[in-house]
Image (cartoon, rainbow, N blue to C red; front, side, top):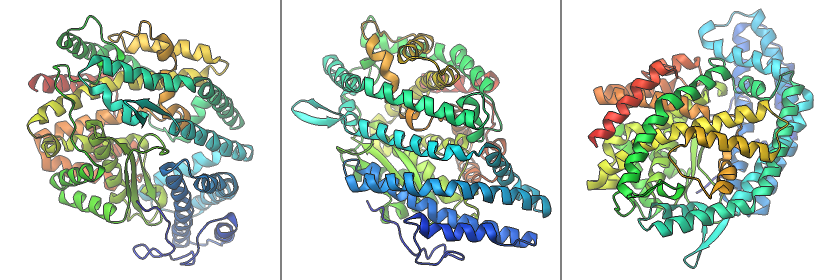
Length: 571
């Protein structure tokens, strides 16, 4: 894996910044931002050129930060990588914020003076006006503080290991034992991981207290009632509201929770258990050995390469290019940050995939998922505006989850005669995901609209959500674990309010799946058409371009869940 930044980008040559300049400190970047701020703009054509130059400067700046973040997460034990990342967070990134605000103000003013093509600039101008309205000087150091707190969460989790069977393992590595037919093994390893999180429970509660207080200050500085209101504005959720999310939660409770109950009842009966416990949810209910689709990260990469080739050869070529350029870090190891992500090197316009593979079928799904994100990045890489090379998260997850669905006909690459078993697990996990998503999203809405909660009151509310959305799992005697089980979800700490997008996008991905059952090639073409738009159109139009409807009411949810249940019955 290579993540070193480059000084010259031949594929997308610079037109404004000197070819060998790198923004390793604010002094290197500031002259370019100042030049943009003071440059006279007298025509619409000059305004468009100014916007392109601004995108170029921002791309170089963002790539420096991305490179340092990737290097830090790949090895959280390396003090120099941590120092470099924190230097960017503390000493470089914050100094750009005031000048970015002035550039946004300049853009809003210039847009009033010059007639820009409405369709091309509609989304960009909407974003600029929103940024101007939210900006506050006093929030700049608070954003830096928030970034540092997020990094603390990564460091705490990356240090978590357990001893099992004579070996020291990461929590990702020990999680694979939850698929073992021996129930005693599952329980022991589940408790090991849960106890390890409990050991840092007070530290994580304290860290979250700091985050909630800090984020509430940020919101109030921006004249928002609370961080819920601020987050919806900052995340540019122009097309839905907190009330829409609450109705989505209700729909999940009325439509999907009963479907999950049916699936878990069948699981409990197949396992011949009186009650399902948390360690009974990943094992094969018929006593078969766990699916182990690969042994090494190289095997995982080769298998996904073949699937991407079969879905669409051009997508396979993109993945091959990433591998050739060292843009993959797939295996789990001690000291590596938890989870998985896809990041953009914005100047080179190439994606990077990070994950913690340990040999499970979940790892296959993760790489297919992050591959979808990578294809999204690649599909819109030729847009001249950086903001359009990024995209709304609700649609970004259609790209990733949609790729998981498009891969379904080709899973025999990994599973051979047990492919239907893997497909069944795939659809079951989709259904199980929705109630979990509702819990995560509802918890955050409650926390950030009730900011005087103590840690114990937060845990009380989490338990209420467990009873509402996880009725079929027996947590008796495990209440201490349940009360802090939300600590494992990095989104609470690192990307607050970023989770309902997965639920909205999963509905889009299921529509991609249904389209593919009718006409696979047409569905792939529509999917790629939507991805190619990047962030250049409003969210409903992006869904429509991909052959989907942007809607998460019962009208859309119920028939999709019915289709999934019918598919499961056939498997």
